Image (cartoon, rainbow, N blue to C red; front, side, top):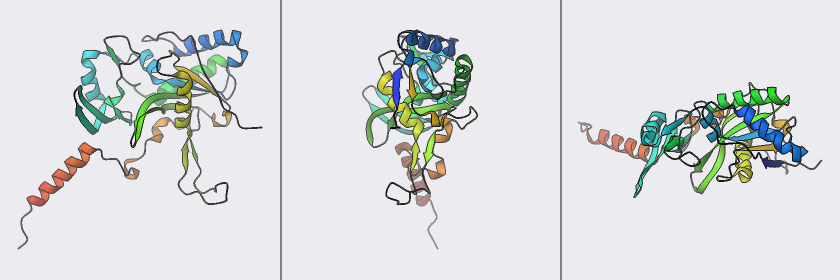
Length: 267
């Protein structure tokens, strides 16, 4: 059969409040859609791509807007880069979840006035809880990817990427194989979870109130719940050629220069 991937958004999910049952709300919205479109009913091998905002809202990760800066500081492991502009200072930081993003992922878009929203405490754990609940509720073998929007070095704009995952094979490591012409592949590792996250955003969007999409056609990627989560997608420090941001590189260079200047001259 010709390879085919189908994506659609789940409509009818209401505004999420702290403590809401995402499994119940998502399955209820799917049931309504399936009445008029039977193809919308979940099937074995489907993957649900879920915007992290609704996970954060359900987990009660809202903070008052005036506490946003304090929350950014609390969620920051290190400052990678910062730049002053007329509206303030933009900081790119590494978060406690191991992500590198602006303002530690705190966001005010699609959030009630006067609030900011933190990332889920543990996106992989959130994805696993949601996936287990959906599998139990529907009786289907499903996967879940939790997404957020990230900027990219050397590229304009943003795209969605996987920050949490459960029951999904995340990467295709093609190293050691060959390409279509028989040439050896030595560096190709395709991040399937990020590709799905970005593709799903085409049907979810940022202003359409569709926070969940379904991907069908990749059942080969749906695996056991105890599989590795999206945290494994963060590049280890020792393998990261661009780990230092501008602020860190400047500081380390300055400190090294000062050490050189204060050395005693050779006798």
